Length: 92
Image 1 (spheres, rainbow, N blue to C red):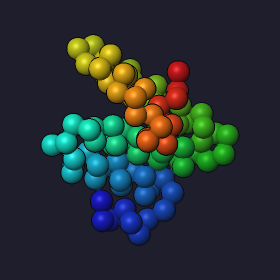
Image 2: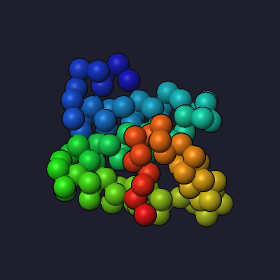
Image 3: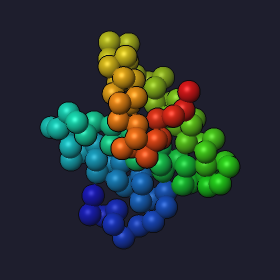
Image 4: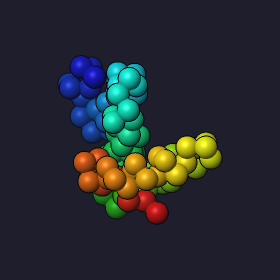
């Protein structure tokens, strides 16, 4: 997480995604952080209108990777926490 502080744009969000995935696995309430940062990285990498498309694509791609056994649980959590996750889970 510390390495991300000196970065900007997509690189910063990608570094935060990696750090979040590694650092907070023990806290169930933080499980969406890595996914949200990865979506933000996609937005930032493409920028502008293309950024919105790229972010939505990343969000849908992530959802397609969810195992069926936890899919509805994760989607419900995304709905509940979307506001505190920069609304990046609005990708339907």
